[in-house]
Length: 508
Image 1 (cartoon, helix red, strand yellow):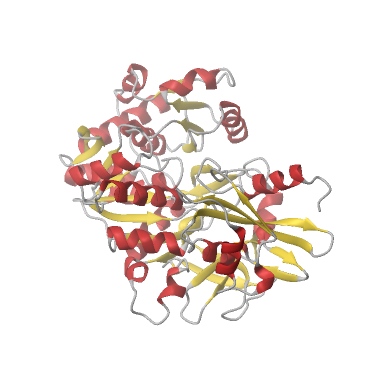
Image 2: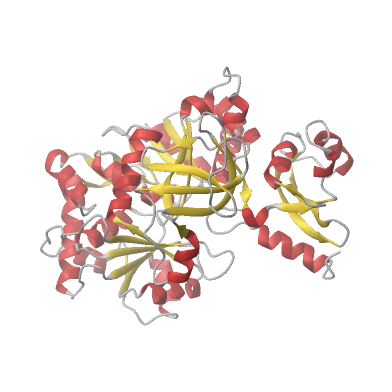
């Protein structure tokens, strides 16, 4: 089934409901949203676009972004959303690798990208784009569950990004898991797009279209904590996807303003580690509005979920362990922990997280070698390490490449980070391994201090020793004004290791 059918069906039964909003301004109801998407599809088909052709979107968040996505799908083509924060040269690589035939862009990105590619580029929110959407509408193209809908390119922190093939069936499965495992959706809700539509926020658009919800795009086109708080108060109830760093910033902004997130209904967080101290503070301020999801591009948004009751619970005997987890398997997947050979491990043992089910990708775009390494015997080998408890709660340890082996013992950076974050002087922290001739690796903690505090290694060490074994202590602490992050907000531990290497090229 073509996911674009959902827009067609909602427009038939709730056409006069507000659909696309730029801040307080309603850009389109569902009748208009559908007409513009179908018109764009008609223009694309008239220009020779065939089912399966790839069309990129290199743009900041805006209401036309959703028109472009559903227009591409209506035509039977494949959307290639590209993070607007990427360098135009990086975007051009994705255009070339995907074989895209054209791209829709933000106006300010059109010129820089045109210097890197000869493909036709059409700015969103332009007269040229409006003309395309005014063409005679095309019917929804026939697509099957296994047909490609979205090419999602990984962030590429360890090499060239790979194109994850996301099918119409995967989008439908991810969408079905949302009301089952994450949060119910009604026509009264507003999906607020503070995170990039090219990533998690955009993947949640189809279920909100299907349920006839409003789609609220901040005028800034991105994440501004004060703007999110104001829009939610004025246009709630709002639901939104956020990376953990965004939750941290939203909490800080709300505390500074003396508010508690009025109008916010649900914040779904994921895409990186959320430390227990941060989410405890957020829940204490905002209340039970948080749901955690764990997913990867290869199984988008749909591996596990930790519901709002679990996130807010402080009465269960295991509430701390559950809050530190990423929840239980979502409804359409199986989750297991495997050893080096992919054999299942019993509850409590740390191994590689394996997933199989309807939301799992069929493979990488034109990359059979990477596909063979990642999909084994029907399982997606995530590369993440973790363990399941007897009740099915999954707790992440670290990426397998981030595990520190010191003196022959595995040390998981996250457990050190979790404890350091409970010290009042620490705002953010990331722990990595440094080569050591004596131990194999030493533990090094990069710390962003809370305002008004300076780094005191002795105080942090004493704090760690109240909860962790002595061999898990960092051998060194490095104060930074901020931690390096990629365009999705994930901490770049590769960059931290490079800092250590530059400081000591001999490797210690």
